[in-house]
Image 1 (cartoon, rainbow, N blue to C red):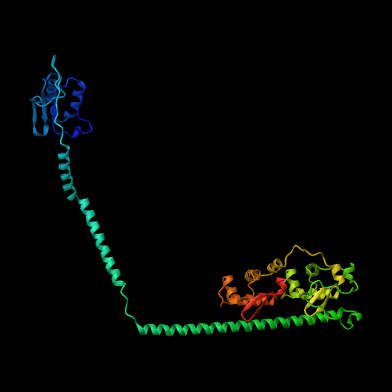
Image 2: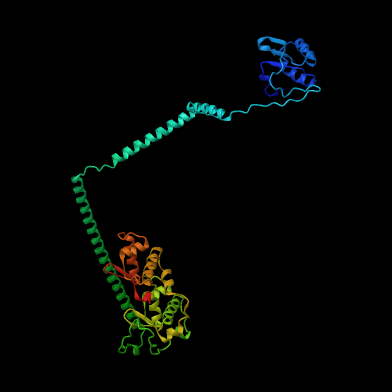
Length: 402
């Protein structure tokens, strides 16, 4: 039987004896439209009664429609029905010569591959790739040849390089000199301001002093001597006795002085007070508040630029917050660039790498050593009396590091 999927592609038909009506119906599907209905009825009627070996050959495209006899198989017929009483014969088939068949097939396969366009294209691609590789190696060998030396160009390049190096050196020396001059000017300016403030404080102190206090002064007390004995008792002020109240800024100032006293430092500078108060040392806040509490007899000036609590001041000062650290207080009054510079100086001190050079300090901050950033920030910290800068090196002042 022929599959119905390809039945429409058949050009000719050979039909033998068909006794089943289903087989004849399947055949009718192909014949329909190919021949006259009368012819099909004649053929359909003959199919069930045909003899063995008799069949109908129908090739419509060639006009063939006839009944033919097909001879029986002369070779071994495995599909033949044995006759009654016939003994089945065994067939001895000659073995196939597989070696010969393989040789023939190999020859055919070799000829096919030799003429295969795909194989030929692959071979051409390999040859082209090898050719490109050889060309690249040749070009690389040519490029590796040393070029001619241009002595004039080398001499000119060395000359210009020397000029540039010398110019950069001069610029660096002048920049260092300018920084040293600015540092010296800043230092003297701060000293002048400090002396002016001291003169003002002494004048205020004289205004509020009693005749007994105008007697010849005692021996001066060293500014940074730890654990200095408490000074002689003075008459309690009205504020200390409760006759007058202190303002919040005055209490903040007295609390800062009490904090330093708790740390073992009785005599402190204006900058030290400002830091603990979280005020700017350059502002007039510290000077004005000191003038006010000096008139109340709560502070005194034992040495140039230094101030300390009197007995009345000790009694009037609020309890200090000893959990507060000096470094935290300093960092709270600084801007972000100032705080970064302060932290790097503190790191250098903790690592015992002070004094540190300006270029190294700038590199630690991620700044250019020739930029105005490092110069301006150092000038600001110097005015705050936090750093000391001299001869190209910088370090924190001793009162900051303890």
